[in-house]
Length: 320
Image (cartoon, rainbow, N blue to C red; front, side, top):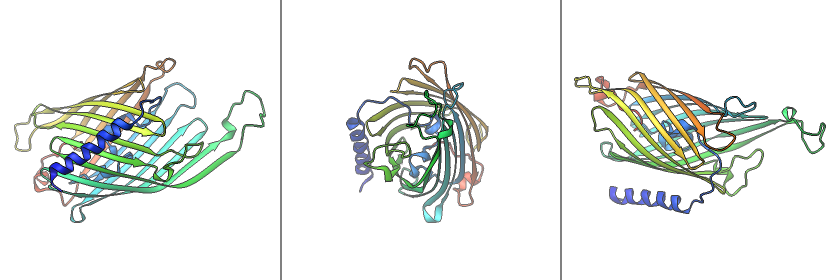
């Protein structure tokens, strides 16, 4: 298959997903900083060459509300050039009210293509989905209500995600599906429903003073669909050296169809260490007074099989 046919095929899949999805989004179903690390919903993302990557973020939703959601996410991955494969692991802890979720996963991705012009990665994650509900934390209007279960209930189930991601010099196109064992099943107290993701990102790193990216994503689960747009700009400092400009500071803005807007800022402490913060604001009546905060840390280590130009001190741009 030629590169033009492959590009057209992936773009067609994205447009079909976009058109067929129902516009009934009422809740956010992804973290703000997913634009920086898509491995949480597309395992193909970890097929990034030249470095070992470490990523973690913490999200405190509806700040000031008792029992509000709190999410902790940590991921690590490395690409093995001889195998054209990437291996990774992740752990997500999600707590809201009386419910607590733990989701450890192992991830594999295979990458092929013309590295200078395009690449295509296929990814698969497998692990377990553990969820517990502590009934003793319920506050029923009627004391000792017989319809309320005050015991602690737990369940552990297998979990899997799959995805594909195509990259060219200017575009990134991705399709993925999470919680594959929940396909065709209705969500209940313990089951996390199957999600479908599609995204298209335009990127431009040719400018000396800044890098920018514009993205569109659609997410669907059951009868809920959320549309999200993102603009991201990273400022550079011209060094005048052979290794090129140094990335120093970035800003991002995200708007969702769920009447939410997010602001992001990041600082590159070193070429390989980045700290970020995101604030998520809801325009839904009753939630506007309780903002959501995220703190993010990213770190990468150059691997021994990295391209010669990176071994010589040229830092590879983040978020390819």
